[in-house]
Length: 66
Image: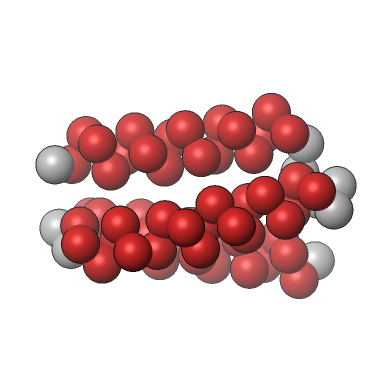
């Protein structure tokens, strides 16, 4: 549960920063988000394809907003 909560919190923070047009701060959180997603996948909290999809959608969100 800890990994899932950590992952969702960092994703929420990143999405909030992107919607507030604070892209520089959001880009600094990307490595932390990737780390949280990867750890959740490694521990079996989420499946590998789900982890890949989350990372892809996060990058798409950042790319779309620039």
